[in-house]
Image 1 (tube, rainbow, N blue to C red):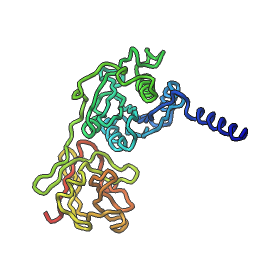
Image 2: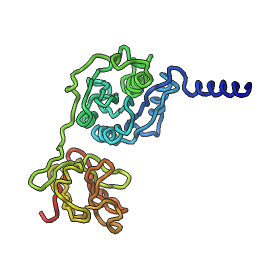
Image 3: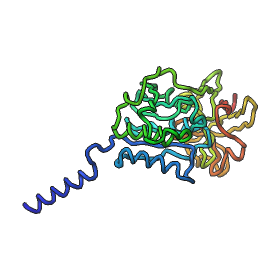
Image 4: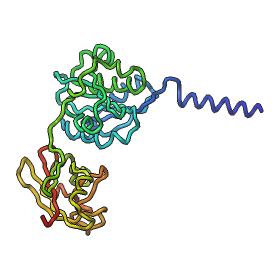
Length: 304
C-alpha cells in the first residue's frame, strides 16, 4: 500500500510538472519572411516564452519571399485549417513596418486568430473562413515592455507579444484593443476561379517551391464541371500580365506516376485545386513560370 501511494503521489507530481496551472490552452504559430540566418525569429520565440514558458510555439515558415504579402497570405490559407480551433497565428510580412498600416488581430468564424499588419495578408483567410471579429492592437497596453522606441521590429515587440498573451490566456480577445468593422480587412484583388463557355480561369497563387509544380486557385468542383476523366487530355494556357507565356496539352492524372519521367501532367494538389507538373522535374523552371496575382491561367478540354 505504501508503494502504491508513493507511486500515485509521484505520478501526480509529474503530471503537475508537465501541465502546470495556467499553462497555455492554445498553440502559437509563427510565420515571417525573416529567414533563420540571424536572431530575429529566436527573439520572437523568446518573447513568447517570456509571456508563458509552457506555451507551445511552432513555425509555419520563415522562408516567405522578401516582402511578399500575397505568398504569406496563401501559406496561412494553405495551413491554418489543419490547426485546432483557438490556435493563434502570428504572420509578419511587413514591408510597411512602422507606418500607418494597422496592427490587428482577426478572429475567424472557425475560432482561429491571426495577428499581424493589416496589409492584405489576411485576404484569403477572410474570404474562405469569414471574419467573426477584427480588433486593432492597442500598443499602449499590448506591447513588450521597454520597446517603445523600437519602430522596425513589430514582429518581436508587438505581434509575438500579443500573440503569446492571447494563446496563453494572459488576455482575452476583447482586451487586444478596439473593435474594427469586419469588412474593413484590407484585401488584395485577384482573379477568382470562374467557369465560362467550357474554359476555367484563375491565377497561379503560388508554386510548389520545392518541386516547381504550378498550383492554381481552381478548385476540384469547378474542374469537375469540365467532365474530364482520368488520362484525358487538358489544355493549359498561362499568362503573365495578360501576355501568353506557355501552352501545354497534358493528361489529367491522379498521381505523378501516371506519366513517364519528365512528361507533363495535370493533377489535383493537396488542397484539391488544379495543378500542373512534370514528373520528377521542375515545370516552373523549365517553362519560366512564376506566381502571383498577375499570373493567370486558362484550362479547357484539349479538344476545345
